Length: 213
DNA sequence: CAATAGATCATCT
DNA sequence: GATGATCTATTGC
Figure 1 (cartoon, protein in one colour):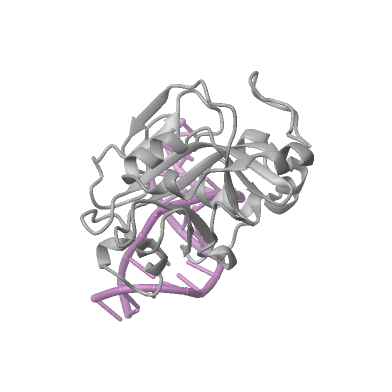
Figure 2 (cartoon, rainbow, N blue to C red):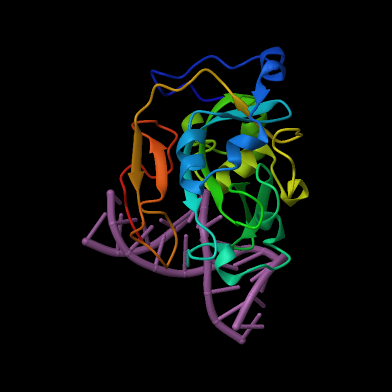
């Protein structure tokens, strides 16, 4: 196991403490995607023995957002986006990686929030097993494909109710970080929309230096 | 450092 | 049949 590499790195949360964390209510997600994206920063994503603090997200606005999957309208894949908020939208990208989204907004409004990076807070050893070689713990979940692999999140969890589990998003102590904004990563359309949000200075953020494509 | 190639497949045209 | 909300390893400066 590599050494902890951040001065702010905390001790792992115990299983007992994990079980006590309160999941966010459905109401939390029933708001504009941008609001959900900004306010979900600092919350704790939990699955089994693993957990991570959400430090980077992107908002996808629905059918008016050409970079969003819902831009193509309602399809079998995007079905869950049109349903109740607070569920998991998970899909395969580049034939190889799963991406996790939190369904936001009321029913029939297909907005969502892509979870792009976590600061690991529990189950680091298990994450390392799943990810193989990583130089530092801050790189365990520093990207959308990395965090799903580390956490063991797959499409089997498509549609999972995040307030009930097994995959859940919980309320921790509030975060003290400043929120920084940038364009979204890896898209071809709407490349200037400032819909990526992350905690300034956090070592687990995927691309702190604002590079574009 | 930056740029690029290759892996690999569900989804949509 | 082409593409993509990615990652890693490798090459090149």
